[in-house]
Length: 171
Figure (cartoon, rainbow, N blue to C red):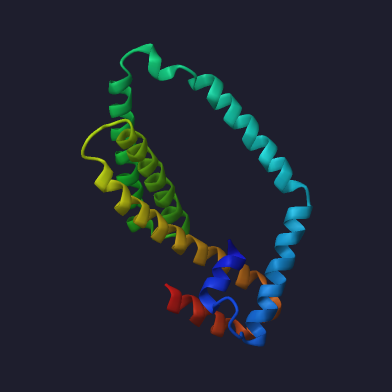
């Protein structure tokens, strides 16, 4: 995500300053190190195990009766979580709080999509704005990750103001 965010900001294929080219090279090298470390494969195995467990626990859940009520309760809870996460993000004003808000919005958007596909009326028009909000919050999170990566490159500290300016313009 970090390399792609840098490319989006600086323009893929356009000529870049030597500082940005050097930063991009370091970020690509760091990504390769992570990919080759085995941690990614280990994380994917853990995620697969967790998803299998969720599938076993939820199999047939909606067929146990009262499925519509369960969906309505879940929809209301998802909306409430997203609204509370928004309030928390505005109150705390931290990257972590805004990322939590994004995750809550995405979860609610998925719920809206599922219910709309199931034929619940009046929900389809809410999907677009929720997706747009999640994308905006995701873009802000991507910029935060890029900023952290830039700060981690101590050898570029002298050029930090140029990078901070780039990030400020993107925000």
